[in-house]
Length: 418
Image (cartoon, rainbow, N blue to C red; front, side, top):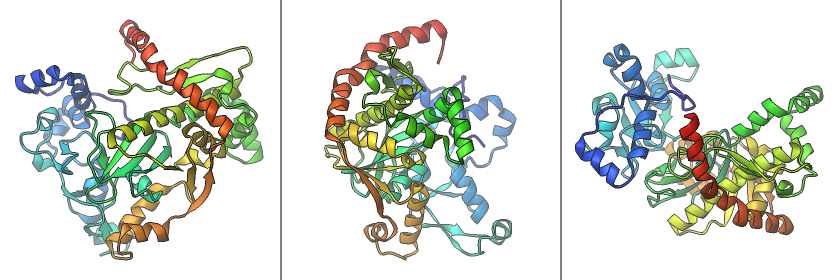
């Protein structure tokens, strides 16, 4: 099994043919397509473990594999197809035979599972699976969707004017839409947990992973104190930054600890500017939280521009949403109320909503969301803090990437990293 955090890439890519190579070069998408091909797990296996690839009967994502183990059937949800496979994100089915994706990835249609939309039955629990798991034999297995898509549904976001801020390892802003809208051109929206809909997404690949990075590298004392008090280190860190003013006294962080594909590009790197002799670890910690929120605000503005919908409210979920400081900072930076659901684990709740609608427990998603979700707390933007953040965002943060991009490219050329 190869999980999504795995950094292995294929180097000997399958030939695309002169037509596709020329076309992607002309439209300036060759780098994006090559990234897709190099990241495809199937290509890595075919290159590095050819003896295994030659014997491969089916190629499944984790959701498809677990479905097979539970039902004995090679089926998967359309909502789970977020990997590097020949999937048509607009039509929500496997790509047509003429698609370039079949040349980009070393799989054929017979190797892939049948696809079922969310809320439909994938099959029933087999006797063998029941014996191994304790799940009752014959229980229907209902299709849901990928983690972020379920997170959006579990947060109760059914329309594109209410977005979800996911404060997870990868920080994202997401919104459901009935229309196919690419928040970043040529990067498709993922399948939604709502059948036939799309989940727009802009991500910061190493979002709240940066909190763990900070804890590991700079918060040894806070970790010891947290252990003595029997609380999470984040509780101590939140106390540490409570007295730091909005804007971290001019310390601005660009959260590209991992490069992107297009915006930001593969040359992107993290940056921190504005250091002075007043700055402490607390300022740096707050700057990380602020930098992630700035990046997600950029995503919101992309949504609004591309989807032509004004986002009126935000809901925060994921592990990082347990922090009052993080959610309040997001409200201040966005200038919008941020609602926190009664559970930060809204991904599991979203899957449960799909199941509840699928088995007819509720007649529709509106009813299910009203019955199964609730808002626990609303964080309202503070006027003075928002004014400071808005000026820093408009005058500094939004200009950072364009100014630093040539330097990032030079660093990449000189060092070969990333």
